[in-house]
Image (cartoon, rainbow, N blue to C red; front, side, top):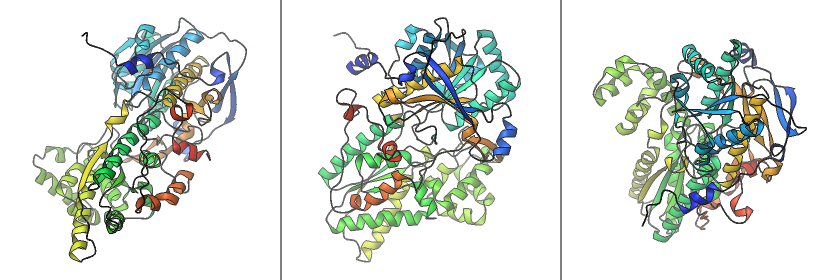
Length: 551
């Protein structure tokens, strides 16, 4: 039997034609709205971005045919993978060719470093067609190189001039799009003729605002994780002897955890933003878990599921202070890096921390303490995916239950299994929603470029409606920015969108979580992503988006 290079689903998905907003299916006219201002720190942001600040919102409508000049475009995949990235490139390619058949698209290899190091390929129809509706970023690869030095910008301008590239599209999250904004301003100030457009990518769901309703990849990743959680819950309800502690991706916000809770209805779901707002300690979080474990044990239910956001430890106020101190202490610290043994590093850190942070650091298991001092990411943040919070909570819950058992207040059995769902969802075949959304974003970016725009993010709104009724356009990236403390300095960055405790999704969660925790079995088993069938099964957006839109 001949070896297969593609699965039956891959072959079928290659033929799928993504749906577009009605305005993008014909000739387009651009409509400009009111001037914009940044979400905060308006004076500082305006001073840093004098050429790209205050630009108007733009939307696309159907209009008369228009002739566009030939353009060359370079595209960059930046940061972690997210389902639908390939379709952004496909939409960008198709949009450019529809506007002028002689337009060219280049892909910079390995992320932003490809722009700086002049590593690229020309993307042809033959190449692009191989990646339609597929997961992953492997068409050109991605990377986390941070564009922050003028020499990097100049190297980028150099290759753009050589290849006759008029615009760069950066597909990334909040940090990557912050880079896009800085690059757009730099090129504008120096009249390089190179435009920069961003696209909102991150499975974490924390790149959203009044104009960006959701980032792409969030829908698919949450559906993948929810299937796995549902499978585990069916197993838990069958075996009736394990508590499953499930940590989910989401470094800076709990959107994934909350969405997966809506889709699967676990017994416990921890929301980091609530923990921070209530000024909870690590012990407080443990007590909340223990309370449910003990309650269920009284009803002979010695099993359950607990969803834990990846970034929880950073939201516990005392831990957040400790991590902030560690971030400042460890950035480019040659003395610390020169130390060899873990004990030496631990003693060095203890000697440099404030009294309160040192006490917390001392109280942590050595394994967790070590994980807090591992190498930072390129943006200076602790790599929370390496911190095994679920194991820490299991250890502390087990210890507390043992104390209660000794006091005669707990008679159940506690056996635990830990999970971390992260990479399982980042490169999945995109859901119909993400396939359509990302293709529309790429097509929108092509029009923004041809219309001469720079410093904009491609924007698709009205996403709970059928795709034909989606609204396409662009939003100035400066509109989303504020000043934040990064790597010991105040820097302009896109403001992260956290779970709002006064928002409809969290309010709904508050109203149902006690039902999920008690002796009634309320588990939902979502099953795998469906690509073919009734629209209510295949094309639905996230429950978070529906709740936010009042549905």
